[in-house]
Image 1 (cartoon, rainbow, N blue to C red):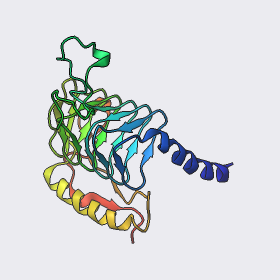
Image 2: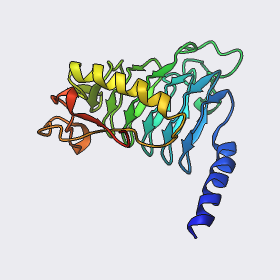
Image 3: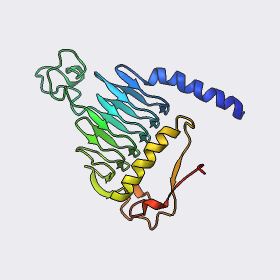
Image 4: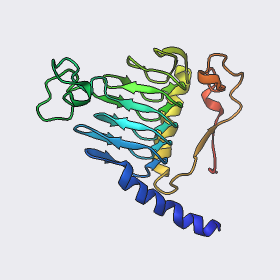
Length: 228
């Protein structure tokens, strides 16, 4: 049975991607898409390598998503101005769409930019015009209406910063290990190369009820798994 599933799962992903990935989307390597999700762009959306997208997600916007991004179930990354509601005498269901060649409404050049190594929690909503910095964490159910700085943890509606993923000195070490890991992943794809161990006391300000055992720890306590 395991052997059969190992064959069927990649086949299912290949078939489902043909349905899920719509117009104007360019994807990198090792993209995983959960069932019920769909991705499209009015003009152009670029998705990096090793990105995981959960079930029932809607990504319909222009922009870019970096490498190693984890998107939970039921996330919406959408246009802030998808339809021109200011046209007089036209019902909303027939109003001009932002992808139309002759669209004259607001937001035509708005994009979403999501940096690498970002975690977007369950049910979060991110409209165009927002940049999420590298390494940030978006708490479950958050509505992100403004930019998020790198390695920030944000939560709420509208989302606000409630903590930091790493202390500044740990960010430096994390970036170095990530760069090394990117090289080693060529030989060992989908393998977790690094793990933070014994990071100290949990932070009381982690998003969506999770435990942040990383903040405030020392970079010399990072250990490389599988290395000699």
